[in-house]
Image 1 (cartoon, rainbow, N blue to C red):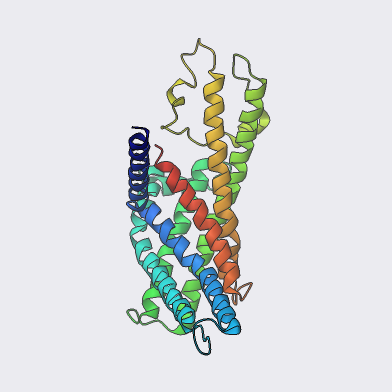
Image 2 (cartoon, rainbow, N blue to C red):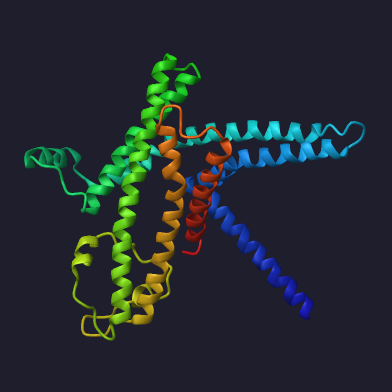
Length: 311
């Protein structure tokens, strides 16, 4: 009886895992994050396979001569697979333009009117505005994607581009991506201030919310939205004449700190990579450095997508 129950629980866990994996890979962002991990881990896997092949040859395993040919062949094939996955991700990003346009239109439902208002104001909006940051990030991606695809199509001979022109479009496409990452880092700084203030307020609060401090005003608008899946999401505060649910707020704050740390992890990988690719000649020559940084960003993205399955 006990054995049967254990088997049932194991089967249920396996089904839940399959359901989560299916949900993860059924979305554009989840599938891209999964492919990204395979792509960027390729240099690390190849280096390991070549080391094993060399060791196999040195100790004479695998028959006469111990050439280690099988491992070397596998390493070569893995490299080709990684390159193909990289190209597939470039193609996928063409469809990534649609959600970016949707994002931009959600920020500015009447873009022409918004542009006219900006020109008439005579000054640039402040970066302290979350809407300004998000608008600049959306525009940077709208410039990054088309330039990247022009470069890729030029490399395939679909569009007649000289090597010099492809180098220019490729370089500037990544520079616009680097701008997005830079703005994201600034947004993380603002979110950090907000989380610090919320954490301090939570420790000091007993029954009421404290007044906004100067730091709260600076970081206002950069709060991470509470997770709809949180059991305390709808009970963090009750009506205005009821006390703050401190336990619920603590749970939401804990969730927001996790999301912030995950975003920091992603940008820890992306920031040096985009600077490297934005620099003519690059900052390093070893593919292991780029591969390691890419894996850090990919793991961060996969973690974020995996947590969406909890919702």
